[in-house]
Image (cartoon, rainbow, N blue to C red):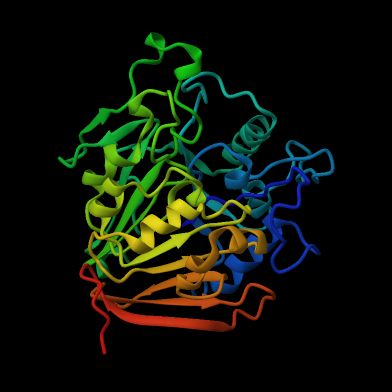
Length: 357
């Protein structure tokens, strides 16, 4: 399963390309996938797009190449699909892409052309179903892994209640809201929890933490969903760790031992976010924080707290042992395609975070 495949293509030098600029982001992602597929596997069972922003699905430019059929441009996930077959594609908007209002930006229009073309070619396209534990399932030897479950937690403000597949709405009906208060694209992100044995992992796109000043309290999504996510071993920091994320309620409920910041802007992670993660009094008292990138300008602003990161930035890989009772964390060099391990942590016992000596 591939969760997001972005390409921020606005031309601003917000991060350095990794490994370098000789290929596009979508091409690098496809090559990474191909290197790490299990033996004999060449396709993706699922691609899941958390929300419709270019750094999560692909930002097109006039120079972006057209696909083989000439129907859409290649950037991010659309480029990945050019070389790797996707059997099922899930997002928050299919089929009408109209919540909370019609989505008509250039990147989403291009993505919809891609969706239509892929459907014609046999890809199954589905709307992500909050509450479901049967939409994303193992398609290879599932009987060997009876404890593997992907629970859909949230999308479009519809959140699992924790009971069977039932959901509730966090957001008021859009018809009752002024345009300025409508849910933002980030607020509509989908989130899921993966479980295997005792191991649990949560990721939620760009779901926001604290509401912006002056906006309704219900714009604060993290505190509203933290309890239903429950304790996990690993979680990906929402919205790249920019400003309002990692609220106290979120940190306290998830109790993650390993925290991954998918950083790429000079403002990732925000100093206050990193402070809340590493200095929290909520268990576990020892957290291991990893980043995918760290601009020098970000290090200057963060200061000494940057030294509390567990390892240098790179590809952060979580390997869960058979049965799901323990896991390990590896960081791979991202300056080339040799995937050299530059840091290793664990094994950790799943769900209590105790390092196994």
